[in-house]
Structure formats: C-alpha cells, structure tokens
Length: 50
View 1 (cartoon, rainbow, N blue to C red):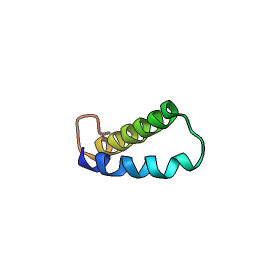
View 2: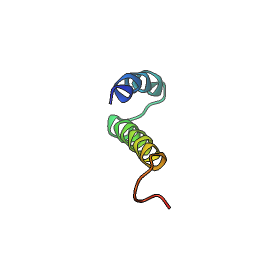
View 3: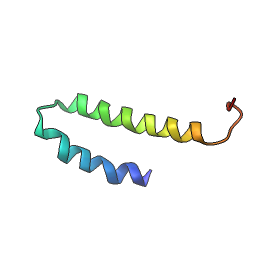
C-alpha cells in the first residue's frame, strides 16, 4: 500500500510533460498498480501454482 502511495506522485510529476488527459493517466496508474499486485501474487506460493 505505502509503496503505491509513494510512487504515484512521481508518475504525476513526470507524465504531464506530454499532454495526457487525467482519465488516461489514472487508468495507466491503476493498471500499473494491478500488474504489480498480480506479479507479487504470482511470485507468492499458493494453491494456483503449477
């Protein structure tokens, strides 16, 4: 949770150099966060492994 809160503002500072609408930027951040969660859950041992 905390990692996402710390990294998100950096994305907001960097990305607007190009013109990007807020919805698209928000979706990109959400997608990035979700893929990070998925990657973390895939690494974790669980009943779905194998």
